[in-house]
Image (cartoon, rainbow, N blue to C red; front, side, top):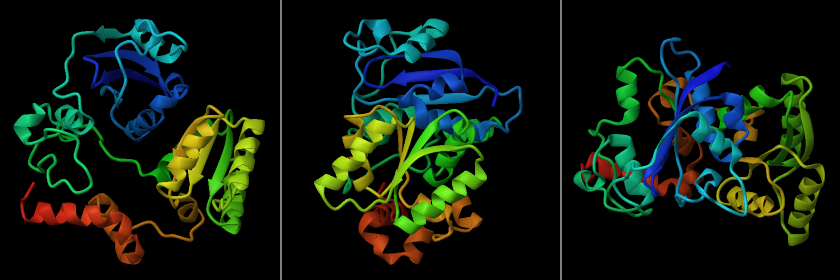
Length: 305
């Protein structure tokens, strides 16, 4: 994969950020950076004279929550290394100490209140970043960068492709026969992959949940993939994390996609960021989960945002 030239680390609620030169391998050792670091994989094809950029935004992190700034009771060696090797900006201020508004400011470079973003939007909020606002992604595109999103059904395979020779994996989710096909296909596609355990996603009792946690604690996987859909997968991951420290990723229906039981949207839909709409058409029952997206589109069409 080679080395990233620059990493920019920004913490919205604390007033500081820094940048550093660091390799992909070092980033991947830090669980907090997993998803953001993985997004840099998609930029591997850009010209060599472009600097790869990884932008990390964390919520609820205080200035003293890292050991290089005096945290006690735990250490943050990977972030400390970035701080030591890079440049620290200790007087950076964000537009607002709120998750949604701080992200709006970070994406657009505007003071959030000036673009109608004064807090954290909820499911029924009818405001957000206006589509005419220029974002970091659009500016980078104009400068020749490749900018894209990586769906979970692609990201987990990128993680496996990068680390299957050195990490151990545990799989949770899907029906038993689908899960067994996933395991067989992974072993065929990634020769030598070490899958230390797997379990279907049907946990009906506390005893079954505890048995799963006990097994994970016993085999100590480096990476745990959970394909149970929201919010079940987030809840079980939170529970497992209390007993075992690993890299976790929620995958939704990715096991079904990988084995061909569910088809990805055609390229046109994906290219135009309409994959959610395609899946809604194919699976109308998803309307319960996507009703807020429908409301969002309605507001956009009526220019209420």
